[in-house]
Image (tube, rainbow, N blue to C red):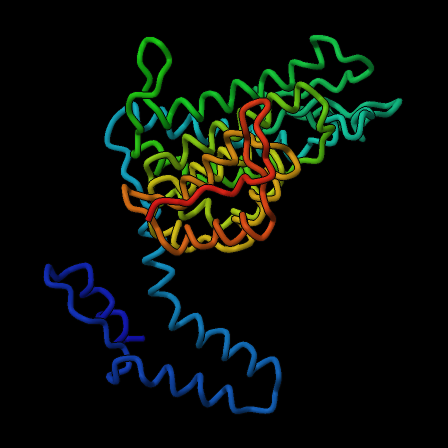
Length: 341
Protein backbone atom coordinates (compact mmCIF):
# COMPACT_ATOMS: atom_id res chain seq x y z
CA UNK A 1 0.00 0.00 0.00
CA UNK A 2 2.92 2.32 0.70
CA UNK A 3 3.86 2.24 -3.00
CA UNK A 4 0.33 2.20 -4.42
CA UNK A 5 -0.91 5.35 -2.67
CA UNK A 6 1.86 7.65 -4.03
CA UNK A 7 1.31 6.26 -7.54
CA UNK A 8 -2.41 7.00 -7.27
CA UNK A 9 -1.76 10.54 -6.01
CA UNK A 10 0.34 11.31 -9.10
CA UNK A 11 -2.79 11.10 -11.23
CA UNK A 12 -4.17 14.22 -9.57
CA UNK A 13 -0.91 16.10 -9.03
CA UNK A 14 0.66 15.88 -12.49
CA UNK A 15 -0.60 17.91 -15.42
CA UNK A 16 0.59 15.21 -17.83
CA UNK A 17 -1.22 12.27 -16.30
CA UNK A 18 1.09 9.20 -16.37
CA UNK A 19 -0.17 5.68 -16.98
CA UNK A 20 -1.04 4.03 -13.69
CA UNK A 21 1.13 0.92 -13.21
CA UNK A 22 0.56 -0.48 -9.73
CA UNK A 23 2.16 -3.91 -10.19
CA UNK A 24 5.10 -2.98 -12.39
CA UNK A 25 3.77 -5.24 -15.15
CA UNK A 26 1.07 -2.97 -16.61
CA UNK A 27 -1.72 -4.93 -14.95
CA UNK A 28 -0.65 -8.36 -16.13
CA UNK A 29 -0.19 -9.64 -12.58
CA UNK A 30 -3.87 -9.02 -11.89
CA UNK A 31 -4.84 -11.05 -14.95
CA UNK A 32 -2.51 -13.89 -13.97
CA UNK A 33 -4.14 -14.09 -10.54
CA UNK A 34 -7.63 -14.21 -12.02
CA UNK A 35 -6.67 -16.91 -14.52
CA UNK A 36 -5.07 -18.91 -11.73
CA UNK A 37 -8.24 -18.66 -9.62
CA UNK A 38 -10.37 -19.75 -12.58
CA UNK A 39 -8.45 -23.06 -12.71
CA UNK A 40 -9.54 -24.17 -9.23
CA UNK A 41 -12.18 -26.81 -8.55
CA UNK A 42 -14.26 -24.55 -6.27
CA UNK A 43 -17.26 -23.49 -8.38
CA UNK A 44 -18.02 -20.22 -6.59
CA UNK A 45 -14.39 -19.14 -6.81
CA UNK A 46 -14.21 -19.95 -10.52
CA UNK A 47 -17.48 -18.14 -11.20
CA UNK A 48 -16.36 -15.04 -9.33
CA UNK A 49 -12.98 -14.99 -11.06
CA UNK A 50 -14.54 -15.28 -14.51
CA UNK A 51 -17.08 -12.53 -13.77
CA UNK A 52 -14.32 -10.21 -12.59
CA UNK A 53 -12.25 -11.10 -15.65
CA UNK A 54 -15.10 -10.22 -17.99
CA UNK A 55 -15.76 -7.05 -16.03
CA UNK A 56 -12.12 -6.06 -16.35
CA UNK A 57 -12.21 -6.18 -20.14
CA UNK A 58 -15.68 -4.63 -20.50
CA UNK A 59 -15.08 -1.56 -18.31
CA UNK A 60 -13.78 0.53 -21.17
CA UNK A 61 -16.89 -0.08 -23.27
CA UNK A 62 -19.13 0.66 -20.28
CA UNK A 63 -17.34 3.95 -19.65
CA UNK A 64 -17.58 4.94 -23.32
CA UNK A 65 -21.28 4.11 -23.33
CA UNK A 66 -21.79 6.19 -20.19
CA UNK A 67 -19.97 9.14 -21.77
CA UNK A 68 -22.27 8.93 -24.79
CA UNK A 69 -25.20 9.59 -22.46
CA UNK A 70 -23.61 12.63 -20.86
CA UNK A 71 -25.26 15.87 -21.89
CA UNK A 72 -24.24 19.28 -20.63
CA UNK A 73 -27.00 21.60 -19.47
CA UNK A 74 -25.49 24.89 -20.59
CA UNK A 75 -28.45 27.20 -20.11
CA UNK A 76 -31.22 27.81 -17.62
CA UNK A 77 -33.79 26.53 -20.12
CA UNK A 78 -31.84 23.26 -20.39
CA UNK A 79 -32.01 22.86 -16.61
CA UNK A 80 -35.73 23.61 -16.59
CA UNK A 81 -36.38 21.15 -19.41
CA UNK A 82 -34.35 18.48 -17.65
CA UNK A 83 -36.29 18.98 -14.42
CA UNK A 84 -39.64 18.96 -16.19
CA UNK A 85 -38.81 15.84 -18.20
CA UNK A 86 -37.70 13.91 -15.13
CA UNK A 87 -40.84 14.93 -13.25
CA UNK A 88 -43.10 13.99 -16.16
CA UNK A 89 -41.38 10.64 -16.70
CA UNK A 90 -41.70 9.77 -13.02
CA UNK A 91 -45.41 10.53 -13.28
CA UNK A 92 -45.76 8.53 -16.49
CA UNK A 93 -43.99 5.48 -15.07
CA UNK A 94 -46.20 5.68 -11.99
CA UNK A 95 -49.32 5.81 -14.14
CA UNK A 96 -48.18 2.80 -16.17
CA UNK A 97 -47.31 0.85 -13.03
CA UNK A 98 -50.78 1.53 -11.58
CA UNK A 99 -52.62 1.16 -14.89
CA UNK A 100 -54.81 -1.66 -13.59
CA UNK A 101 -56.44 0.89 -11.27
CA UNK A 102 -57.65 3.28 -13.96
CA UNK A 103 -57.66 1.49 -17.33
CA UNK A 104 -60.71 -0.39 -18.59
CA UNK A 105 -59.92 -3.82 -20.02
CA UNK A 106 -62.36 -5.66 -22.28
CA UNK A 107 -65.26 -3.35 -21.45
CA UNK A 108 -64.93 -4.05 -17.72
CA UNK A 109 -63.87 -1.74 -14.94
CA UNK A 110 -60.31 -1.48 -13.70
CA UNK A 111 -58.92 -4.53 -11.93
CA UNK A 112 -58.21 -2.37 -8.89
CA UNK A 113 -61.91 -1.78 -8.23
CA UNK A 114 -62.96 -3.00 -4.79
CA UNK A 115 -65.17 -2.16 -1.87
CA UNK A 116 -62.10 -0.79 -0.11
CA UNK A 117 -60.38 1.41 -2.67
CA UNK A 118 -56.68 1.97 -2.46
CA UNK A 119 -55.46 5.42 -1.44
CA UNK A 120 -54.69 7.83 -4.22
CA UNK A 121 -51.18 7.75 -5.53
CA UNK A 122 -48.94 10.04 -3.58
CA UNK A 123 -50.28 8.89 -0.18
CA UNK A 124 -49.11 5.73 1.52
CA UNK A 125 -51.52 3.21 3.05
CA UNK A 126 -50.39 4.13 6.52
CA UNK A 127 -51.14 7.79 5.95
CA UNK A 128 -47.50 8.82 5.91
CA UNK A 129 -46.07 11.66 3.87
CA UNK A 130 -46.58 11.40 0.11
CA UNK A 131 -43.86 9.89 -2.01
CA UNK A 132 -41.48 12.19 -3.87
CA UNK A 133 -42.41 10.98 -7.35
CA UNK A 134 -46.13 11.32 -6.79
CA UNK A 135 -46.42 14.25 -4.41
CA UNK A 136 -48.24 16.31 -7.01
CA UNK A 137 -49.80 13.48 -8.99
CA UNK A 138 -52.85 11.43 -8.11
CA UNK A 139 -55.02 8.85 -9.81
CA UNK A 140 -58.76 9.11 -9.40
CA UNK A 141 -59.97 5.62 -8.47
CA UNK A 142 -63.65 6.49 -8.45
CA UNK A 143 -64.40 4.23 -11.40
CA UNK A 144 -68.06 3.60 -10.62
CA UNK A 145 -68.92 5.85 -13.55
CA UNK A 146 -67.19 7.22 -16.61
CA UNK A 147 -67.78 10.84 -15.58
CA UNK A 148 -65.42 13.79 -15.66
CA UNK A 149 -63.63 12.96 -12.36
CA UNK A 150 -62.57 9.57 -13.70
CA UNK A 151 -61.58 10.98 -17.07
CA UNK A 152 -59.25 13.36 -15.26
CA UNK A 153 -56.68 10.56 -15.25
CA UNK A 154 -56.68 10.46 -19.03
CA UNK A 155 -56.48 14.23 -19.35
CA UNK A 156 -53.46 14.35 -17.07
CA UNK A 157 -51.52 11.77 -19.04
CA UNK A 158 -52.45 13.41 -22.37
CA UNK A 159 -51.16 16.77 -21.13
CA UNK A 160 -47.94 15.06 -20.05
CA UNK A 161 -47.46 13.49 -23.48
CA UNK A 162 -48.14 16.82 -25.17
CA UNK A 163 -45.41 18.49 -23.12
CA UNK A 164 -42.92 15.81 -24.10
CA UNK A 165 -43.93 16.09 -27.75
CA UNK A 166 -43.63 19.89 -27.75
CA UNK A 167 -40.03 19.57 -26.56
CA UNK A 168 -39.14 17.73 -29.77
CA UNK A 169 -40.53 20.32 -32.15
CA UNK A 170 -40.55 24.08 -32.43
CA UNK A 171 -43.90 25.21 -33.83
CA UNK A 172 -45.12 28.34 -35.55
CA UNK A 173 -48.21 30.37 -34.69
CA UNK A 174 -50.42 27.94 -36.58
CA UNK A 175 -49.13 24.98 -34.57
CA UNK A 176 -47.12 23.48 -37.42
CA UNK A 177 -43.68 22.04 -36.71
CA UNK A 178 -41.03 24.22 -38.32
CA UNK A 179 -37.90 22.97 -36.57
CA UNK A 180 -36.88 19.74 -34.89
CA UNK A 181 -34.96 20.31 -31.68
CA UNK A 182 -32.25 17.65 -31.64
CA UNK A 183 -30.85 18.88 -28.33
CA UNK A 184 -34.15 18.15 -26.59
CA UNK A 185 -34.60 14.92 -28.54
CA UNK A 186 -31.25 13.74 -27.23
CA UNK A 187 -32.15 14.77 -23.69
CA UNK A 188 -35.37 12.77 -23.90
CA UNK A 189 -33.40 9.80 -25.22
CA UNK A 190 -30.84 9.96 -22.40
CA UNK A 191 -33.63 10.07 -19.79
CA UNK A 192 -35.39 7.08 -21.35
CA UNK A 193 -38.58 8.86 -22.41
CA UNK A 194 -39.08 6.55 -25.40
CA UNK A 195 -38.99 3.45 -23.20
CA UNK A 196 -41.54 4.92 -20.80
CA UNK A 197 -43.90 5.63 -23.71
CA UNK A 198 -43.35 2.14 -25.15
CA UNK A 199 -44.36 0.72 -21.78
CA UNK A 200 -47.50 2.86 -21.92
CA UNK A 201 -48.38 1.46 -25.35
CA UNK A 202 -48.08 -2.07 -23.90
CA UNK A 203 -50.71 -1.44 -21.21
CA UNK A 204 -53.70 -3.81 -21.70
CA UNK A 205 -56.87 -1.82 -22.42
CA UNK A 206 -60.22 -1.86 -24.13
CA UNK A 207 -59.56 -1.11 -27.81
CA UNK A 208 -62.98 0.58 -28.07
CA UNK A 209 -62.41 2.92 -25.14
CA UNK A 210 -62.28 6.44 -26.67
CA UNK A 211 -60.20 7.76 -23.77
CA UNK A 212 -57.50 5.15 -24.27
CA UNK A 213 -57.63 5.65 -28.03
CA UNK A 214 -56.79 9.31 -27.42
CA UNK A 215 -53.96 8.41 -25.04
CA UNK A 216 -52.47 5.92 -27.48
CA UNK A 217 -52.68 8.44 -30.33
CA UNK A 218 -50.75 11.02 -28.30
CA UNK A 219 -48.19 8.36 -27.35
CA UNK A 220 -47.60 7.67 -31.03
CA UNK A 221 -47.41 11.41 -31.78
CA UNK A 222 -44.58 11.66 -29.28
CA UNK A 223 -42.64 8.74 -30.74
CA UNK A 224 -43.02 10.19 -34.23
CA UNK A 225 -41.68 13.57 -33.07
CA UNK A 226 -38.95 11.81 -31.07
CA UNK A 227 -37.42 10.14 -34.15
CA UNK A 228 -38.19 12.74 -36.83
CA UNK A 229 -34.99 13.87 -38.60
CA UNK A 230 -32.92 12.12 -35.91
CA UNK A 231 -31.05 8.99 -37.12
CA UNK A 232 -29.79 8.13 -33.64
CA UNK A 233 -33.28 8.07 -32.16
CA UNK A 234 -34.59 6.20 -35.20
CA UNK A 235 -31.99 3.47 -34.61
CA UNK A 236 -32.94 3.20 -30.93
CA UNK A 237 -36.65 2.86 -31.67
CA UNK A 238 -35.95 0.47 -34.55
CA UNK A 239 -34.85 -2.09 -31.95
CA UNK A 240 -38.51 -2.24 -30.86
CA UNK A 241 -39.97 -2.30 -34.38
CA UNK A 242 -41.82 -5.55 -33.62
CA UNK A 243 -44.09 -3.61 -31.26
CA UNK A 244 -45.50 -1.72 -34.24
CA UNK A 245 -46.15 -4.79 -36.38
CA UNK A 246 -49.83 -4.89 -35.46
CA UNK A 247 -52.74 -3.67 -37.58
CA UNK A 248 -53.40 0.00 -37.00
CA UNK A 249 -52.95 3.38 -38.60
CA UNK A 250 -51.03 4.88 -35.66
CA UNK A 251 -48.57 2.00 -35.69
CA UNK A 252 -48.04 2.39 -39.44
CA UNK A 253 -47.34 6.13 -39.13
CA UNK A 254 -44.86 5.55 -36.30
CA UNK A 255 -43.08 2.81 -38.26
CA UNK A 256 -42.90 5.18 -41.24
CA UNK A 257 -41.27 7.83 -39.05
CA UNK A 258 -38.67 5.29 -37.88
CA UNK A 259 -37.58 4.50 -41.46
CA UNK A 260 -38.12 7.96 -42.96
CA UNK A 261 -35.01 9.16 -44.87
CA UNK A 262 -32.81 6.62 -43.10
CA UNK A 263 -31.15 4.54 -45.81
CA UNK A 264 -29.28 2.33 -43.38
CA UNK A 265 -32.50 1.20 -41.68
CA UNK A 266 -34.36 0.85 -44.97
CA UNK A 267 -31.68 -1.49 -46.28
CA UNK A 268 -32.19 -3.62 -43.17
CA UNK A 269 -35.95 -3.97 -43.67
CA UNK A 270 -37.01 -7.62 -43.52
CA UNK A 271 -39.53 -9.68 -45.45
CA UNK A 272 -41.58 -9.98 -42.27
CA UNK A 273 -42.08 -6.21 -41.99
CA UNK A 274 -43.09 -5.82 -45.64
CA UNK A 275 -45.32 -8.86 -45.45
CA UNK A 276 -47.10 -7.41 -42.41
CA UNK A 277 -48.12 -4.22 -44.22
CA UNK A 278 -49.17 -6.08 -47.35
CA UNK A 279 -51.39 -8.24 -45.11
CA UNK A 280 -52.76 -5.09 -43.46
CA UNK A 281 -53.75 -3.72 -46.87
CA UNK A 282 -55.52 -6.99 -47.63
CA UNK A 283 -57.39 -7.14 -44.32
CA UNK A 284 -58.00 -3.46 -43.48
CA UNK A 285 -58.16 -1.98 -46.96
CA UNK A 286 -55.95 0.44 -48.85
CA UNK A 287 -55.27 2.92 -46.08
CA UNK A 288 -52.93 5.66 -47.20
CA UNK A 289 -50.72 5.12 -44.14
CA UNK A 290 -49.89 1.54 -45.19
CA UNK A 291 -49.01 2.63 -48.71
CA UNK A 292 -46.89 5.51 -47.41
CA UNK A 293 -44.85 3.05 -45.34
CA UNK A 294 -44.14 0.91 -48.39
CA UNK A 295 -43.22 4.02 -50.35
CA UNK A 296 -40.89 5.13 -47.54
CA UNK A 297 -38.84 1.94 -47.47
CA UNK A 298 -38.37 1.75 -51.25
CA UNK A 299 -37.06 5.30 -51.55
CA UNK A 300 -34.75 6.89 -49.01
CA UNK A 301 -32.72 10.08 -49.14
CA UNK A 302 -33.79 10.60 -52.74
CA UNK A 303 -32.60 7.20 -53.94
CA UNK A 304 -34.64 4.16 -54.95
CA UNK A 305 -33.52 1.02 -53.11
CA UNK A 306 -33.60 -1.97 -55.43
CA UNK A 307 -33.47 -4.50 -52.60
CA UNK A 308 -36.56 -3.05 -50.91
CA UNK A 309 -38.34 -2.72 -54.24
CA UNK A 310 -37.81 -6.40 -54.92
CA UNK A 311 -39.13 -7.39 -51.49
CA UNK A 312 -42.25 -5.26 -51.87
CA UNK A 313 -43.00 -6.50 -55.38
CA UNK A 314 -42.41 -10.10 -54.33
CA UNK A 315 -44.96 -9.80 -51.51
CA UNK A 316 -47.44 -7.89 -53.69
CA UNK A 317 -47.37 -10.52 -56.43
CA UNK A 318 -47.39 -13.40 -53.97
CA UNK A 319 -50.56 -12.16 -52.29
CA UNK A 320 -52.12 -10.76 -55.47
CA UNK A 321 -52.93 -7.56 -53.65
CA UNK A 322 -55.91 -5.79 -55.31
CA UNK A 323 -55.51 -2.20 -56.44
CA UNK A 324 -58.07 0.61 -56.19
CA UNK A 325 -59.97 1.28 -59.39
CA UNK A 326 -62.44 3.90 -60.49
CA UNK A 327 -66.09 2.81 -60.18
CA UNK A 328 -67.25 0.66 -63.08
CA UNK A 329 -63.80 -0.48 -64.18
CA UNK A 330 -63.04 -4.15 -64.59
CA UNK A 331 -60.39 -5.39 -62.14
CA UNK A 332 -59.82 -8.77 -63.76
CA UNK A 333 -56.79 -7.48 -65.71
CA UNK A 334 -55.42 -5.29 -62.94
CA UNK A 335 -51.83 -5.91 -61.91
CA UNK A 336 -49.66 -4.31 -59.25
CA UNK A 337 -47.82 -1.24 -60.51
CA UNK A 338 -44.18 -1.41 -61.54
CA UNK A 339 -41.95 0.54 -59.19
CA UNK A 340 -39.38 2.88 -60.66
CA UNK A 341 -35.78 1.74 -60.58
